[in-house]
Image (tube, rainbow, N blue to C red; front, side, top):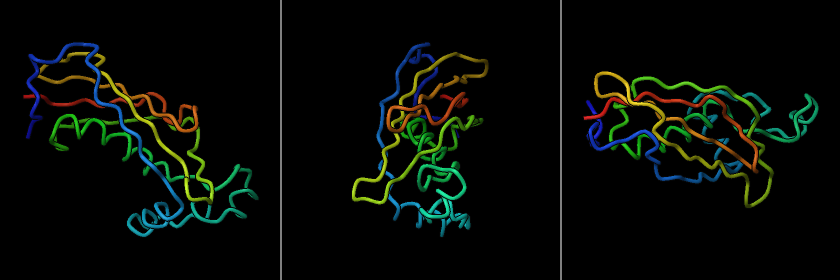
Length: 142
């Protein structure tokens, strides 16, 4: 499948609609259940601090999944994403309160490629710190 967006309608520098994603401890427990990743750094504050973390942190794959939603929402078709990769730069720290943390994601078209594909670069931050680096997706457009 391909995106609902035409390759000819997109220019380098096109900005995707930015999104913010809330993350609470309950979110992490739900993700652990779905993914099978029950590492205590994602739910046990005492353990997380004992291993040198500031608090419980979100799963890296969860953070990646939330970030790519900006691209899949823009394309209208998750199958249009043909490549996706990131570098984990900082953890998303999730305090044990009613607010939790927020993952803020923005993106822009960084390059037009062959075969109606574009590269989208994402900026992913939480608490003002970049949590994913080199976050890039290649998208097949119509």
